Length: 288
Length: 181
Image 1 (cartoon, helix red, strand yellow):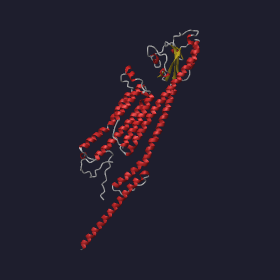
Image 2 (spheres, chains in turn cyan, red):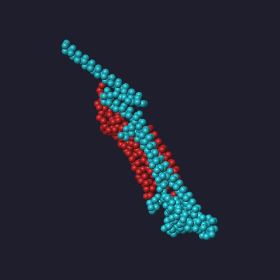
Image 3 (cartoon, rainbow over the protein chains, first blue to last red):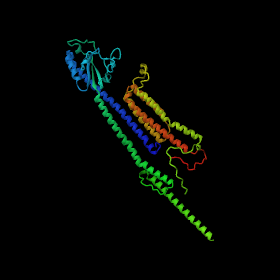
Image 4 (tube, chains in turn red, orange):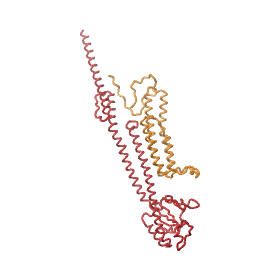
């Protein structure tokens, strides 16, 4: 079946178009997914900076109760998986999960290792390197980002004089948002691309195959069947219903069959007349 | 008029010419064509083997030393590699289809396996092989599938021509045995 004219015309085109559309859709999806994830990380980084700025005044006044309240309010929002502030040593000072306060974080986790890989941690790092994706204990997919709280003159000249001027980073804010909305968007996008690809393939491959079948393969099959019947001696069969560019070919084949039919009839007449002559000669010979 | 006796219907691709009527040279050529037709499967198997390694992100290979990574330099971005993959897929498909149209029997499946392996490697060094593995796999399956089909149909046609051609000079082939269409 794969050697037939139909297969050789349609299979390569179908495979090529299908394969290329699938490859392009996959690459496009991958690029869009990366862009969406980067946008989510940028959004989180902005949120982290907003939280740091919101708690700055309370920290300058050493008002821990207010800072704790702000963290609790933020942590209670839908979509926030965790939010905490830990100091330079990694000790969690504030957290929406009160059970983990006064515990140390692991510097080797993703998002922390980018700065703490070497003996001297980096002071500045890009948003993407500070982000990490993981599945938390509740089974939720989380995108978390760490934002350093930098020292500035207002901090080391404040009334409490808690931090020295030589300290570059006072602590770190760690916030984690649920990736469920992002995953849902990706899933919808993926579904739409699959549907679009299927429609494109049906239209292109199906349309070309249907048109070829109608205008080329069916007429050729009729002509082939007609010539096979003529070759087997069936000269009474008619070839009709061929239209389009193959009309001339069908006409020529029909013409040849008609000439063959005429030649066969002529030959049959000659044979009959010869037989009559032979019989007449035989009868006359007997009478003589 | 002496009409030909009806020929029995046989499935496509069946060789009805007896092998005794085919010269040794033709037999050798047919054997070579059959071996050539199976090259497509070999390339596909090689590609699948490499893809299995890529699916695991080549975790069975030892990591490259920092010195070698420094020599290799920064890998290209994922977007650049994806653009190159799309361009390569398009060019390869166009070239294969044009070879099919021209009736050329040239085959470059092994080269394509090499190119696809390079894409896997580039994505691996860029750290995005997991997200882009299936794109490379789909491209490889399409390109190698087309190459295999092309060389298979080409060899089948050549074998058919070889069987239909006169076995020896002056030999009688007008006995109506014929071959399948």
